Length: 446
Image (cartoon, rainbow, N blue to C red; front, top):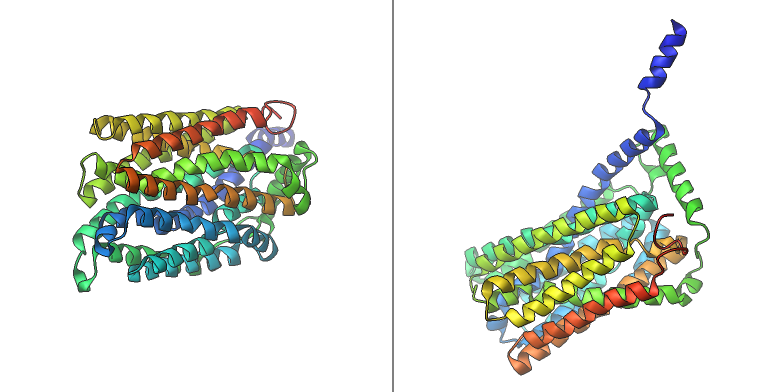
């Protein structure tokens, strides 16, 4: 009887893999929704300028070139402060770092409602970049403390898809605010957008202090066995990856880091163009109402969110990042070039091309972030990830500024879209050329 009971207990006991899956489901439910909410708030405060532009430029008599420079100057602040912020996160923890970042960008977003001159516009957009610097690469680094390599692309995809969901929420919300509150208290609709969308970020910053846990060993919501399983999975993952660079200076000298910067630069050039000029494209093809623009962009970003998640799942399942990232970027490039030929001749095909450009470009991003952690760890990962993101995001400064100049000088968006499409296509070329398929630990089955 005792032997039978033991046998039955052994049969009923879940295998180790099921236990590991269970604890990672618990971790995902605890961390990813909260981080996604923070990323939605960050994205809203970063890109609401694209919707505010529909009223703001006329009210303040700003040119498209002034707007393009202001939209892009955000990334200069990003560039200058991202590496220090990520190194600070490694030193003091994610909880303190993310709280500081979130409160800072929320207050700055609220101050945007008082813009009257280009100089103040430029300063506040730069300051927004300074405060947000470190959040995105900080979360990427933070998730490496919790997830082994073969679970990260899915986690990255679920987190990063929040930027697409921000478009789903932000478009209709900005359109409603600009239409319904325009003139209330003597303020324009675009001023209300900055105020209303900034307040939740400040609140979320304080919530972060009480909710977030820096590392698995500090998690009061995991029991001892669950902490042990996570530690074993992370240790096994580190051993499987073999030697990776830990030195900050050596990582910064590593050609692979700079090759990844070049690849990500090309992707971000397209992503920032779609972010800051997507609403303008919709208006260009005949939809003048802020509400209509908001809902159309919401639909496009909903498709983008689905693409990010599905591409991340597929990358994890096939243990392959190179083609998943490269082909997604190529789809974005082809769709953006098609968009340039369609404006303003075919509104329906223009909107379809815009949607596919968003899907392809955004789907490439979470899979891309699989690659750096295959050969960087520790302080090198903190500095390397931040360096890749900060330098590559200079494309976020250059692309919108160039688009604004082109639109101001030619009156057309198509030439700028063609140029950005070529740049994004180069991401695929560089990815396939620089990143080996097998034998380096960067791709393929490990």
